[in-house]
Length: 67
Image (cartoon, rainbow, N blue to C red; front, side, top):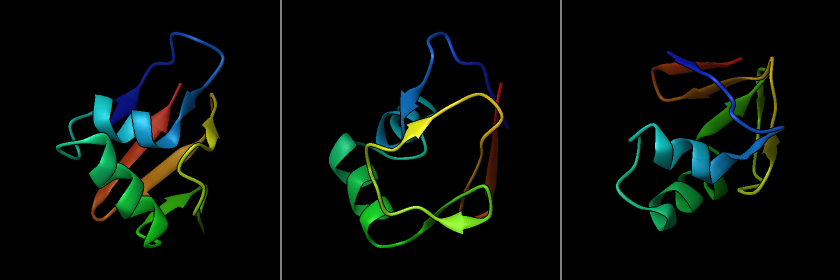
């Protein structure tokens, strides 16, 4: 799955919500806090992490390439 940035960055929990991978922002924050999200191969625990062009996000069996 690809996501094209419209700004300099997007916060991680907002990205998950925009792509409809979760039902709410609260659910997105829980998934991140519980360690279920990887950013560039490493577990990302910061729900407000700034996702920038070139980052690869993995949630369960979904891979998101940010461009």
